[in-house]
Length: 111
Length: 114
Image (cartoon, rainbow over all chains, first blue to last red; front, side):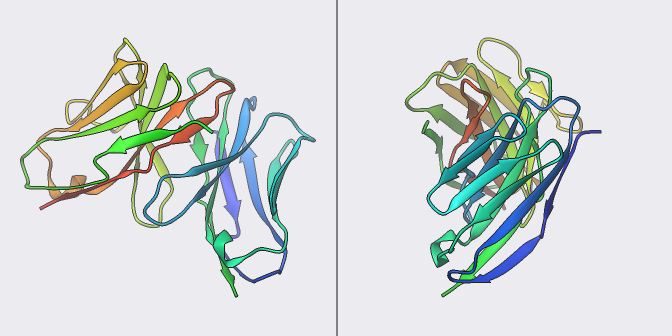
């Protein structure tokens, strides 16, 4: 069964304290792995799409990496405005476009 | 990035009434849109896949007669919650799929059924 597990469930950081969020997945034939940011009461905001192992993408303080079993979202020198829930999702081999979401990691960055 | 809008952002209705939620792709055409439901502090639960010009595909356990989906054009999908009851109160989010399989999400609609 296709599955996505994110860890930790919650993470508290001091401003400037770098860390990583993990997304482990089990899927038969990965078409893509997606990272989103969600603020309370809003829809998910797209961050990155990764397609193959070894791929990396960066945007400001965020960097996403992908291996055959997991993805990491690295946050460098976070700021309070980076506080949000980060969602990871995978798409399997079918062309339906259906995403399987993890439960998310809620990040709180304290000033 | 692609922009997806939802309307209304918030709706309160009485039990037994029907509510329609619109999802629009503003700067691109989307042959496939998705409808999700999200409970407090939980992840997104896919309800159905909406394909332009054809019937929606519902996930197991989702009542298709209760949650009517219409994908009338390449930029508009609607979700109608029929005969709403308090247990239908939730945060409903739509998304639209672009080339490369990335989905862009709308801002969500908070439905409260009294």
